[in-house]
Image 1 (tube, one colour):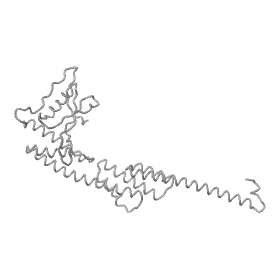
Image 2 (cartoon, rainbow, N blue to C red):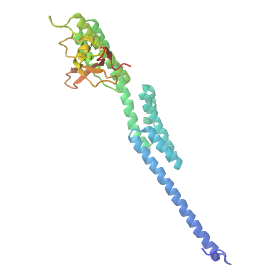
Image 3 (cartoon, rainbow, N blue to C red):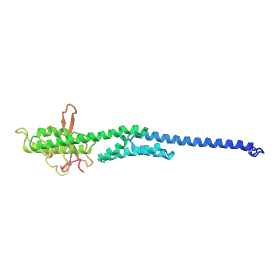
Image 4 (cartoon, rainbow, N blue to C red):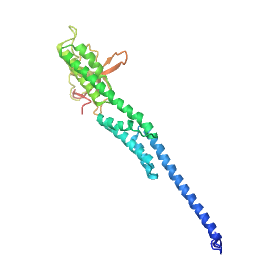
Amino acid sequence: MDSDLIYTENGEGYQVYMKKLTAMLCMFALLFMAACSSKYEQYIDSGMSALKEDQYKDAAAHFKKAEKEKSTDEVKKYIQAAQTMQQSVQALDEGKKEEAVSHAEKITKSHESSKAMDILKPKAQDLINKVKKWDLQVKDMSAKLEKARILADEKKYEEAEAILKELSGTTSASEQVQEIAQESTELWQQIEREKGSAGTTEPNQSTEIPAPPKPASGQKLTPKQGEDLIRAYMKIPANSSIIVEQQQDNEKGHYVFHVYEKVSDPNTPHNATMGYYAVNPETGEVYNDLMP
């Protein structure tokens, strides 16, 4: 730009220059604001996508990035909502059901209307419903397990085992449900041992599979001998419907066997697991492979 356009007697050139400069600054300001707004919206969109995928920690991180671009009441609420839902899920994972429901209810009872809440409210309600379902399931399973214990004490093994098969085959993310299922499996194993000791099989039949001899020095048991050791260890009668099935060897190189029984439930047929046991092929030692 020529200097004579700036310094004229009547100041017209200077005024033209200032107008152009102001227009350029406004244009730069608008471009800068547009860029910031674009990043803000991108982070918000990423956060919403994370909420939909149940990635609440990631969602909060995206919203915090958006806040750095432009601090708004909207994004502050998004951050708080994502963090609250994350706290609820984390509490549930840690077995703190009451705390999980408390956090979830902050979402469901909120009167706020926003994109984030539209996504989170159904998820929070699902979490609350899940906890309620688990509580009912635990109550029902506990009552059935107690009934099975009474039947076992009365030597009514078949009735007790029918209940225990159902309970031990129950799968759930609830730790309490898993514990009851494990207790049921252990009681079932105890009953099988008592039945074997009492000789409840048909006359002239061996009550147990005889254990193979311990391996000689430098030799190893075969997988079939390992299976027989498991059956002897658990006192499984020869005519039992309990299945001992070999799995992949564990990290020690020991044979691993899945011990279970098939449950012919017309609605939900499943395998009732009694445990996973390992055999050291060099020593013949049998141990619970799931125990540390």
